[in-house]
Image (cartoon, rainbow, N blue to C red; front, side):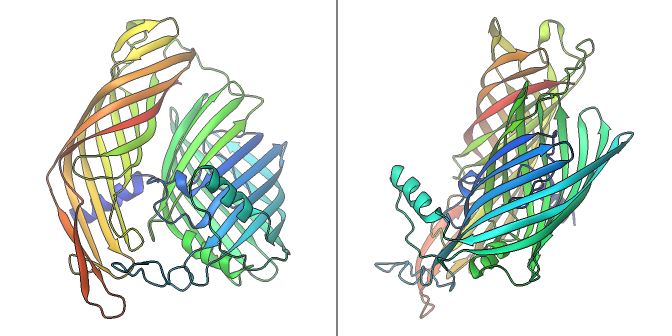
Length: 491
């Protein structure tokens, strides 16, 4: 019972999707603030583990959203691909393991245009909103293949020569609506709950809802929580139906935003709990009326970092790592940030053999103390020595998606108690009286109560005879490193 509760807590807190409640081409309010213009770039490579091996389904997305007064418009271009529609296995040990994998592979592009009205009302610490409007979805050959293969060619990666499901363009109208609210919990903490949906005349419907805990300050913030998505009815294409199935289900989301004056930059990442699919977005926002800085007379600074974990000596694989520091007492004389009570989270995609048939992840949730003693300062530039220590819970999972067994079965899960300590160097700039931002590099050591490995065995898809066995460590003590963007907000 205790283990189950800890797994639920770990899954609910460690985030892994989108920077806001959005459906493609249909904007929802952002977790921290209301921008007038937002540009999004979404890609599975921005997922917690770099997107895994697939580069499939909603493989790339660009979008633009504009809001004025109570009205908004949205425009989205998405490349949808279906690399293995038949579900053919990988023939490990053969000269061409992917000989049947791409049979029937296809793609389609979608452009979504929406418009709508959004109304908001506040009452004390709560604020609610509703929105509705029409939209148009156009699908077919909209240049996605040429753009994707051209980009892959520039970076020396092979293109995808899968044909379009259809070359002609097909247009569908739709209606969309949404509602939600924010509840201030004290200080910069805000609870966010939203829902958004769309439906076409033919009955193709999609919906998304989220529940987020945010830290919102005048110069940005951070958020983490859960998002669930679903769809029903006849899709506009078989590729779109497969992509929707891939995106449906419960996802863990995590995001971070930094803004100065009128311009903000946000990054968010996600992992689906149903199938381990990954997605992330980079956003650029413009707010012509930023919130005023608060008084610095009794300020407290919340520190945060959001970055990349490179793996450790026990378990290989990169992932998204984030932490939030809540001040213990007021600022020290001279502006030193002092001690913080810290909460950290990580979503690591474990490096595995047989990548098409195995999915593996390790998540870490930890709490403890941190500090950022100042080593030197040159005007607005500071050199710090970030320190962190605490206890946490690690949950690892390895699952088979094909003709590979995991310790003779389909799936293995493992939990461990972890002690963690980290130290490094940071450099940040005092951008304004209420904001500093920079970079930090940390070396981390962990001591784990479990040192578990699993045996992965490939099976011949035709005969079921075992062919090859590899060992994979999923828990253990080790030394690793991470690099992160850092920020400290005053409120």
